[in-house]
Structure formats: C-alpha cells, structure tokens
Amino acid sequence: MSSDFPTMKGLMMPSKRGFGSDNNSGVHEDILKALMQVNQNHMPSYGNDEITEKTQAKFRELFGPDTETFFVFNGTAANVLSMKAMTQSFHAIICAETSHLNESECAAPEYFTGCKLIPLPTKDGKITIEQIEGQMRRLGDPHHAQPRVVSITQPTEYGTLYTPQEIKRIADFCHGNNLLLHVDGARIVNAAVALKLSLKELTTDLGIDVLSFGGTKNGLMFGETVVFLRKELAKNFLFLRKQAMQLPSKSRFIAAQFLAYFEDDLYLKIAEHVNSLAQLLAREIKGVPGIEITQKVESNSVFAKIPKEKFNVLREKYFFYVWNEKTYECRWMMTFDTTEEDVRGFATHIRSILRK
Ligand SMILES: Cc1ncc(COP(=O)(O)O)c(C=O)c1O
Image (tube, rainbow, N blue to C red; front, side):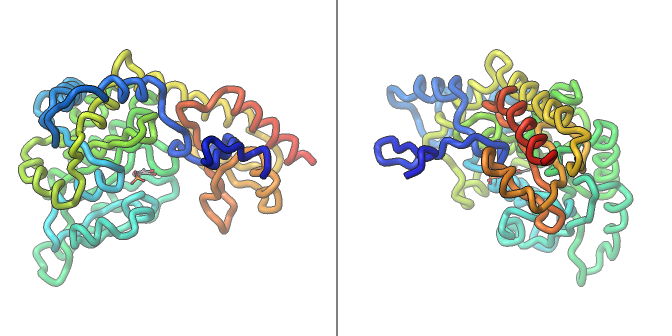
C-alpha cells in the first residue's frame, strides 16, 4: 500500500490535499465542537427543539424578521424544494445552462416538480434580463410551459458574481412579469464578503424571493437551508419537505452547526479566507506560459485552461477537476482549511511543470 494511503482502523485515508472542491475538506473544528455540545440529554425531535428555534431566530436576524428558514440535508434538496414551493407542474424554470439545477441534479428538479427547465447559455455563468425576456412568450397558451421562476446562482458555478444592481434589476423584472426569483446560494457568504454587503443587503433587500443557503461547502458536516425571504411562499413547505424525505428528525444537529457557523462571525472569516486564497492563486500563476485564466476571480475558485498533456502530471501532487473536458478548462477551488502554503506550493508546482 502506498504511503499516500495510511489506514486508520481499517479506513482508507487519502492524504493528498488539493483544490478539487469545498466538499472535499472535512468539518471545521468549531462546528464539530458544536455537534459534541448538543450531543447530550434528550430534546424534542423534528425541529421542535430549542436549538432549532434559536438558529431560526438567528436566520431572521440575518435576513430580516419576515423570513422563514427550513433545514434540509443537502443542496440539491434545497434547490429542488425551493422550486417545488414556487411552482405547479405546468410551469417553466429559467436558469443558466451551467447551473447546478440544470447540470448536476440528475433531473431532480424536473422529476419532483414536473416543470420544464429552460437553461440559457452563458459565458460566465450569469444570465441576463434580455435572455429572460426572450422566454416570456406564449403566455397563457396551454400548449406551452409557463415561465414562473428564474433561478440564478450567486456566486455562479464559475465563481463569478452578479452585482447587487444586476440582481435588483432581475428581481424587478421578475416581479413585473409574474415571475419569482430564486438564488442558489450554496456559497453566497463568499459573494456577500466579496461585495462587502450583509446577507440581508445581498438578498432580502434586493427582492430575492427564495434562497438556498449553503452550509456543507463552508465547513459544516452536512446541512443546508431553504430561506423564504417572502414568508407567504412557505405556506405548504412543512408538508413538501416531509414528502420529499428531507425533514431531519434530529434537527438540532443541523441547527447547532449553523449556530456555530454564525458565532463570532466564523462564516465571514471563512469566506474572507477562501476568497483571498483564490486571489493569491490567480496572482501567483498569472502570466505562466500555457495557463489561461478563463473567468474573473471573484469568489473562492479559479478557472483556467491548461495544456492537456500536462494534466496528469499537474494532478500528481494536488487533486483538482477538469471542468470542461474538451478545452481542459480546470477548476481550482479553495476551502476553509486550504492554507497559503497549499496555494503557494501548488503555484510553484504549476510553474515548474509548465516551464519545463
Ligand atoms: C452551486 C451549487 N448548488 C448546489 C449544490 C448542492 O449540492 P449537494 O446536493 O451535493 O449538496 C452544489 C454542490 O456542489 C453547488 O455547487
């Protein structure tokens, strides 16, 4: 067995660090501690415990008093259940072609809602009002799925950001055209920190209706939330969540993780850390022959094309994914436990391989 794979009580433990995903890291130690702290005594289940209530109050503090929050197990469920709460089966959901909703949820949005997804092409993960407007046709025609939701991702799957003005304009357009606006915010804290806005300023105040708010990619063990920024849309959500098998019985274990995530601004510190490391990597590899940074570096990832023949050797030391198998555009993602040393080591590795 290679020394890369020390065993721990029989478990395979790959020791290679990398830039594959913010899902590849473990759990932030403050969050693990919180899990241990709530792991005592008995408490009511299914969200009727005081930790869940306290965490929901914290969400109201962050997003506004008229918002409502529900925990689910994963991000796909947060997205799909958001869609379910906003649509009927004859509706259409407008999103970016690159969105997680369209690309990486195994048609769960279509399966659970019955809706048609309308994926729009983008260069940078961002859809425009003109594109949305182009879909506002055959309204009232029973032969045509009726547009009802626009879903955008912030930061996008390319790590780019919508400006607050862009979001506000999309929200206003939606509300003027009988559409609702959903944001996939698996990493929205990174966007808020990069834009120097509070969570409320970046969401509720801009007119977003429903938000999938991420936890797992930001240091939690598991747990995501659906945040209804317009409370009336949550009317049937308790039932929808249970039907979709996403009602956590031991809810306190998700709630406690979020509580720890918000305590002492840990959420902001993690976002500042990952965003600044992405900037560092971009600076370190800028101008290296053969490397082309393809997207603006605005949150915690760097996208770059690399020469195909260098892929295997580059990945020998640090793991990462190819984003586009045709162009060898790769994604390098920072996570809460990525260190400056990791980034500098990777940049040195890239430089040494590419300059050979
Ligand atoms: C933008 C985005 N949304 C949602 C998700 C939800 O993922 P999961 O269902 O794997 O928790 C992911 C995961 O990679 C993501 O990147």
